Amino acid sequence: MLELTHVYKSFNIKTPVQKDVLKDLSLTLHEGDFVTVIGGNGAGKSTMLNAVAGVFPVEKGSIHIAGEDVTKMPEYKRAKYIGRVFQDPLKGTAGDMWIEENLAMALRRGEKRGCKWGISNKERELFKELLKTLDLGLEDRLDSKVGLLSGGQRQALTLLMATIKKPELLLLDEHTAALDPHTAAKVLEITNRVVTENHLTTLMVTHNMKDAIKYGNRLIMMHNGKIIYDVSGEEKMNLQVSDLLMKFEQVSGGEFANDRMLLSK
Image (cartoon, rainbow, N blue to C red; front, side, top):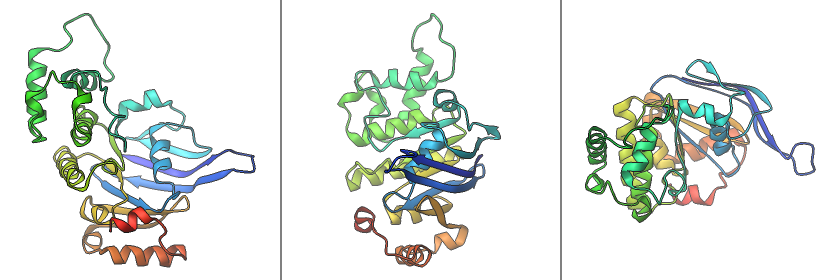
């Protein structure tokens, strides 16, 4: 479903501050894989997601989604394959629009626009049913402006919008990092349910090692633009946070230097 082959990405090329972020990165995700991604600051986690989404071109290598070569495809065209939830709860929704209007935009993604009523009664019923699954009481607030929602409610709504038309690939870029622990746990529960029930191929970057172990069927650790650890199945299920810290030190030759990740272990 996703294949990265020998991907390189650098910034400020041929300047004194050139930064080589992705270095010969290769990764394959099969249909239905739910992969959690951890790593220290500057490991290349978000850069990898941005490269997949087409936010910027890569210098070398290729990117395939669902068998399609999207390496040179612009971001707006690549979006038809991808659902995405960002770290900032404000990024995934239009705050001045109603909840039902946001959902309607997501439902029409990739379709041609025509002259008809914006939202049908059938669609409103669909939105209510989908919102009920979040268990946040939003099904009775279709005409509320999204800007009035809490951060957790907005992230849950963004997740619903990102998956309302089943994407080939779901990208979650530390989508609970800006939330308080209780709300983050709720959003992660919703995420796991949506991903599992819809059998979505998913890449989830997280700073929380416990969450990385708990969720998904596979875990990868990145360091210095490369994947240094890839574990799945029963081995992943039996992991402890101490195992991840030890593995990082063994493979990278140094201590895990990310205060936020250590505090969340």
